[in-house]
Length: 168
Image 1: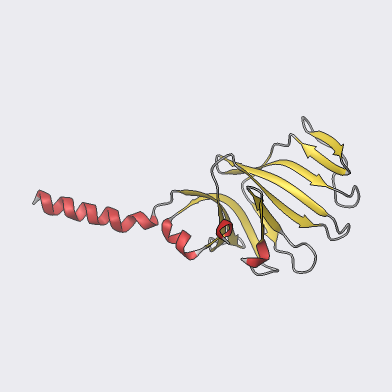
Image 2: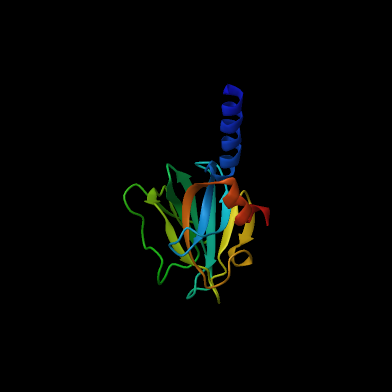
């Protein structure tokens, strides 16, 4: 009797393992739904960047983030053109620096539970940069799609259904 119970319990555990959330990722989900479109595997406190071409200046803007305690923390902003739509100064303990023709706001500690982004159709060319490699988001997510970027733990099942960006 105990052996049958043990086997049954073991089988239930094996069946449920693919549905147990364990892998820390930055998830790109469809709008504000839970439909996983793509994900970036990373460890907590590792940095990643989102880079895009500003629609007015036609120059790149780079936002640096890290994940901590289910929050996205913006740590830096870098841009070339100091004009429309770009910050004019740093706030609080942040540092505003100009170096090599690029403006930086460093020492940022802005937290978000999620970031909504519409993948650019014309100029933006949104890219994700991680560990020195650049991934064009429109390669994995249709241009014009509204995505919600969130830190989360996903299951093996979700990994099989979604697109791992840093495997592209």
